[in-house]
Image: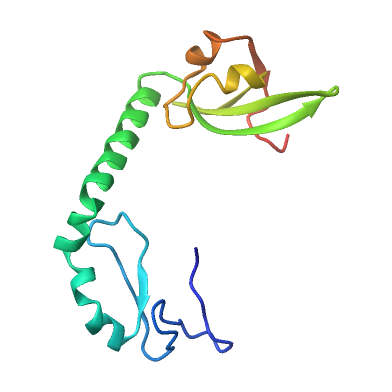
Amino acid sequence: MGYFYTNDGKLICDCCQSSHDVEKIPCPFGYCPPIALCPDCREKFKDKLTEEYHRSIGCDRKHNAFIAREKHRDELVKSGKMVRRAALAKVIDGKKIIHVLFDTRDGTVGYYMNVATYHAIPLSADATIDHYRAFGECWPAPASFYD
């Protein structure tokens, strides 16, 4: 969810809706989105702004897991693998297919595949074209959804 602003562009506090001296307070671990707080709410909820609190709700662990996943993905691409970046369902000649974009060392490549092939691999996985080929046919597609 985004932030709320007054008609004259002042940030509104997420807790009390004040627009006086509101600031975005970041998560100490960079995991959860910054919260917009006025001075009174910063004082009132100061215990929720600490490293200790954010550690207790798992922000450090989740941030580190995210960094590890991104590093693994980057290593796959650097090793020459094509790793899924994005996908879009399309209808071509009356048939629903999935247009998948993959990151490579040299840029982006696209492939089409059947819906069942695409859904054979969880969205949370670093899926490569070889993973998809184990479940069905994949054929070349444009390297952009707009081509």
